[in-house]
Image (cartoon, helix red, strand yellow):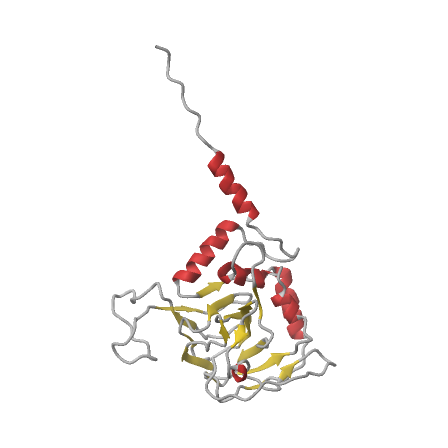
Length: 288
């Protein structure tokens, strides 16, 4: 009998996977940070397992972040205390004027931030269908006074389906810690259960706490109505962030929530020499 012929290994399935991965990389702006299929899969899995929250460094490309920083530096000073309805204490801020390039830099469909949000929440291939919420202004928020921080809270749901909130750090020399209760870590590392301060004893699940000092060009992305989070009180340094929201195309703002879209009614940071138009409505309860 002749020698048995060795069967050649089948490589077609692997090639198909590689081709599929290449096809999943959507067009990007030349200065944007591309996200490949495997990174997208890992980011989305971590985001979903954590209950709708993700912290990512280098959220924008270097060129994008430099453009955002330049735009911020070109704006007029106009920071004010936030309204009493805010969960924050001793924090100052302002709305970014709609005429600012910030909206194109951060909300452009081919930009890094919009693509990242669609990686986590978008439906289908390509650029996805998550867009910057125009009813919710981009706001700058500054922690610079002793005691500035935020108590434990869950972001209000303003839309159906719920919006996705993004906190982009512009600068941080402070000792503030951003903390959250991640849903896939139900116990502290020492095995002792932790009780959420917003729940009565024995009610609801108990979660471990993660903490980070956010770095410039990092983004904390979280779905409204989901993960509880806070910012510890400042004792030194300063921290400057941009806060914005993304929504699914066609999402409708829930009735009565218009007044919860901004902490700074009529208070806007605009480019030098430009006037701001528009204002937010009143508030009826604490906002996120």
